[in-house]
Amino acid sequence: MLASVWRQGARSLVCPETPRLDGQLALVTGGSEGIGLGTSRGLLQRGARVIMASRSAAKGGRACAQLRGELGADEPVSFLPLDLSDLSRVREAARALQTQLGGQHLEVLICNAGFWPRRYQVSPQGHELAFATNVLGHFLLLRHLVGRHLAGDARVVIVTGDIYILASDCTPEYRYRTPFGGMLAYCRSKLGNLWLARELQRRHPELRVRVAHPGVVATSLAGERKGLADAFSRLTMLDPVRGAQTTLYCVTQPDLPEGVYLHNVRGIMKLSDDDPASDARRAAQLWDQCEALCHHHLPD
Image 1 (cartoon, rainbow, N blue to C red):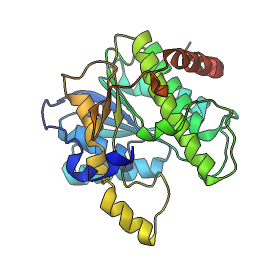
Image 2 (cartoon, rainbow, N blue to C red):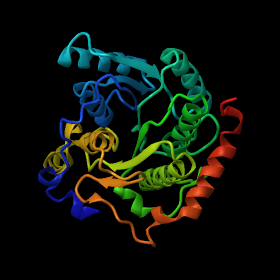
Image 3 (tube, rainbow, N blue to C red):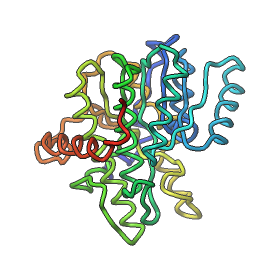
């Protein structure tokens, strides 16, 4: 993991400008800032129509205006309110999206949004907040998109982080008291993202699922950096535009196998049998647990 950070700016993937995505419809969670904004920009530059989904309507509006200002006033970018931490709000967003699409379906779905807690918090349904946002909210969104026939044979990219290797489990009841515990909650959720991707591809082979590690990217995810920490981050971390390249590569490049895990520096990952992400049984268990936790919020 640490070896991947060393000189990652010189070694990180850069997505080719082709194939283009002209006219294709893409949804990006967390698409209004950080890596998500860089991804939204890259999709628009390749001709896609983009729906940016995030919790803050103010940030979403500013992001749409920013991209139209940079790329052209007529750029096909819009905003969808989506609070992944609240299952009721996820269901509402899925209904609103179905109305917005008007019979169309998505060709690209990027599960990018992520939350790194600083203190222990729970969702409105009582689940640890990193799990609720990064895992359970995306699970329910996926279930609605498939159940409402909005996904078709979409390319689905789930963004993880190689920091998942510090975790061995992903559950909703994990408790902690310190910022280090919050970091571990994030690690656990990133392992959960890999398990969800694995099980999604198994259960829905019509989808083309890929997992992306974008690199260590200078965003607001891990909090504000000052002094030496800020200087170190600028030397070692990618900016969000570079951080979006692995996700864009997963979307556009046709030679990647389904279910692949693509690392920004190490390329296609061949996971060992003892890697926690390789555990097919635990992946299936997590899917079933998410199904049970979302029971009252699933599509009709």
